Image 1 (tube, one colour):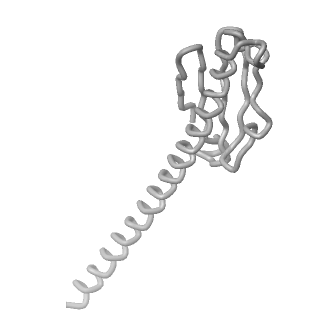
Image 2 (cartoon, one colour):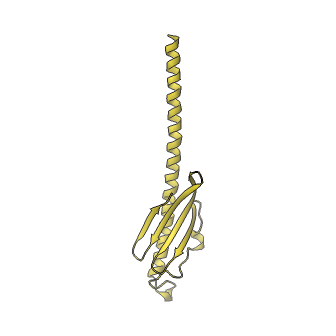
Image 3 (cartoon, rainbow, N blue to C red):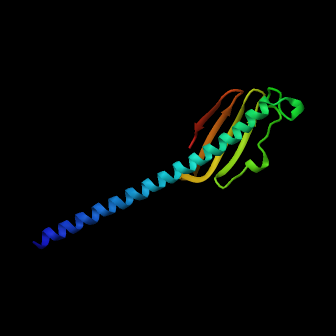
Length: 126
């Protein structure tokens, strides 16, 4: 009877250990996904700002159907969730959002937005 009880205790400890490890992994993944979602939401706001600039006439402070001259507004460069950089071309803008949550090793959460006159494409890098 003693060996059976010892075996059940060891089996219980193993099951609890696996459940704790699985819980930690799932929590970490959920944290990364949440940070990525926040970065995407903020990035879409920045991308919409670029599209607004594209469609606004030059006399009103826009680009007159060109992205040339657009830059990320200073209050949108960094946030509690990450930072943004942009590469501006006359017909599109590439915005890179870099979060402050590590995915693995030294890789941070990163999302790329390609903004054209009528679309915003979201690409998850990390």
